Image (cartoon, rainbow, N blue to C red):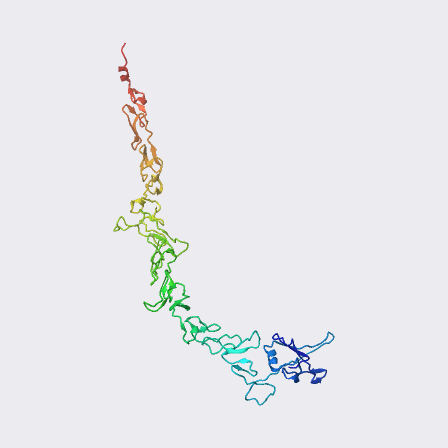
Length: 461
C-alpha cells in the first residue's frame, strides 16, 4: 500500500495495545511528492510499535476491519494523498514470478491456510473463552452434512434435512434426523398436502388443503366432493359442492361426497342438469342462482284462469308457470297469473276461459262488461245482462234507450206497460197511464168507485 503516515487499528483484543504505529520515510521524491511503502509484518525491521511476536501480530490482524492513514499531526498542516494501492499475492503453479515475503505454514489438522487461520472442510471456528482467536472443531450436523459454514457453523445439510445442525426434516419429509442415518427423513405420504409429522409410529399430515381431511388428507369433509384416495379411479382433489347458496349451511350431507350432486335444496329450488339447485321448484319462478335469497317466488296462478288438461285429476296441483312467472292461460285469459279477461270479455270463473260480453249495440253504451257478472253498461231504461231489453217499467227499446211507462200507482195493476206504453189498469180505471176514472166513477185513489153504489148505501129517513 502506498500512503503517508499511517496507523492500523482493530476492534478486537486491545489488552496489549490500542494501536500500532510505524514511522515511515519517503523512498523517493518527485516534484514535491513523497512515496511511502510499508508491509504488515511482525518482523522488528518493519518498526511497528509496540513490538509483537508472530502469534500476537496474527491475533491483531484477525478480523481486521480498517486500516486508517493519518494525514496531518497539527491543525497548521495540510496533507494530500492519492494513488493508494494494496498489493497481494496469489498462488499460481504456472506463474514464473515469485515473491519471498509470503509465509506458508505447515498446519496440524484440522487447520489449513497460509497461516493456519482457516478450518478444514467439515470443521468450524469455535471461540475460546470469549476470545476472537478461534480454534477449529468438527461440524455438528448429525451425520447429514459433509461441511458447514466455517464461521457460523451452519451445516450444508443433505439427506432432506434442514436446520443449523440438520436436526429437522425439510418440508415434505418426516422422521428423526438426530438418529444420524441417511434415510432418517422420508417423503410425507400425504395424498394432497406437503407437510406431515410423526406421532409415535403414525404419520399425520398437517397442511391438508381446504376440503380435505384424514391422516393423509385422503378424504373429503362434509360439503366437499372428490376421490382423493383414488378409490374409483384417478385421484382427484376435493372440491366445494356448488349448490348456488340454496342449502342450509348448518345441515350435514347437503351434497353427495362422490359426485357433488346437491341433496337438500331449499328456498323452493330443485336440481337441474347440473344437480346444483339451479332451478326453481315446480310452481315457482325466478332465478335460483341469484342473491339475496330466496330467488324463487310462487307462480300463484289463478285457479280458474289457468289451463288444465281434461285428463288431469281434479286434486292435482296447477301446471307450473315458466321461468318468467307466466302461467298457462285459458282462451281469452291474460295476465302473468291468468287472472284477467281480455278486453270486452268476462266469466273467468267458468274454467272454460273468458267469454265475450256480447253487449247489445243499441242498448249498451260500449262493448265492455263487468269481469265476474258480465253485466254491460246499459243506456237509460235498458236492462238485461247484455242491455238488450227494456226494464220492466219501460218500453219502446231504441238506440236512445227505453221510455218510462209512467203508470199511475193507484190506477194500474203494476208498473209495466206494453210496447206502446199502455199500462194495465184496475177495473173502472181508464187512460194509457191508468190515471182516469171511467163513466159514473170517481175517486181514483180508492179505485174509481161507482156512484150508484154510494147512493145505495145511504140510510133512509
